[in-house]
Image (cartoon, rainbow, N blue to C red):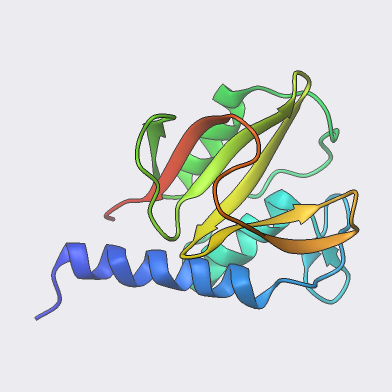
Length: 144
């Protein structure tokens, strides 16, 4: 019999697996599908949909601005737990990072680093190792 911990682990592994499969996908601001391109929100949404989680994905936002509270609200509604930045990361976690004082960015933790939509490189990439920017919040799939 599958326990809630097993289900959480399966979903986390699926999030990480889908993120890795999307590496190489073209970057596109407000992009929501791999054919036309993804931004970091679109990447997170694609990973969520693989676990059958559906959320109201925001659109029309600026690449700069917004708040951690707004982002956390959307992630919590999608079924994630918001954990403090010092929480040890697990595969499938989504990290909210701060690349600059006016910018937020989502990255998916995998067994070998972070997958994220990199605007400068123009594609979804795997960055090995630890996060290159300060982590504000860790989002972990919760029970539902």
